[in-house]
Image (cartoon, rainbow, N blue to C red; front, side, top):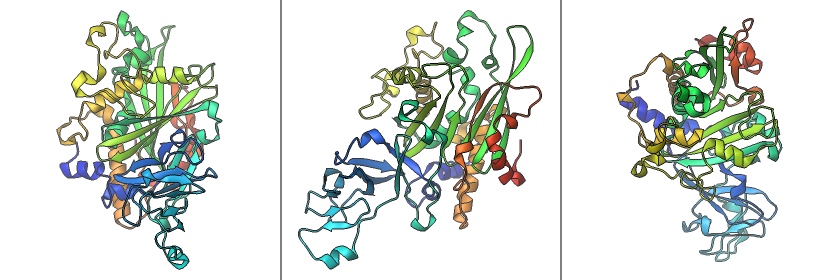
Length: 434
């Protein structure tokens, strides 16, 4: 359980807030590439960490991210004309390059004035089907991350954006919680519940957790005991990394793809990026050894139904007025009352808590160990930045990070199943605990 003050500290991410200062020290996705589909397309309003920006793709395809309001008189550049390698404010015609340079000032055509002034522009990159930005102090810009899916071609990397009316921490904690999969996602992980049969690892609803700090945050193993089809006792281990400040890798399974067309593996990164204190842009990046069936992937997530989500605005639509889209007439055959889709089940229960949950009212159990550790590490990161130190995970080799879900080999420690994490563990050995 957190104190009221700790809850506020973790949840508030606007300008000049302690957690907001932490978030601004990292690169984040701020939109999908498809939201800026081509040179000189319409500019895009971007709300990120409680502040407003305009993103645009210029005539040469370069991406720019500027403060939304024109530096002249404050008109929105989202209304601007994108043309001839810049964006032009329609109020007085001031034109800016992707770097913020003044290209034209029609009502004051003084070259010296244009050289002395420029709009605030932010570092941007395009990778993995998303546009990334760094909005922190210019002298603290970290290296651009090298997530493994950056190397996958577009047909094997599918980013999906979902905007939800909840604080980022609720989304993050929901995703880091292993035990809920045995209940909330029963239709997917243990469909035999309908017959009253228990024959899978996910029937163990109280997994034993071991958490170990790393240089990127932590990773943890959730152990579940079960009996094989041959009646032998076995242990399933599900390993998930938590990557600061608000990212996780959802374990995929070999020979069972999510939206894949063959027998390879499919994994998912999820970035919970705060829009503001009460809204989050969740970027779900599905990447696979197979060509991804995008319609199949959306079906698995439950995002194929327009009453829940639309690719036009990316908003998750249900709310308390319609019981978040639940159909109670199907509870005999659907555990949750949702016809299908892991993501919409998560979004429903997380949204039901309200935009910012009061964590002083909760009652935690041992299965919540990963959530408790995430809060501790986030609070530690706040203290580091307040003390003038760098937050952790700014210069990590992200390309080696992985997850795992399968039977634990008797001769291995669970950490050996994610060998790419070993250096990261060594980097934080002094405060690593189970």
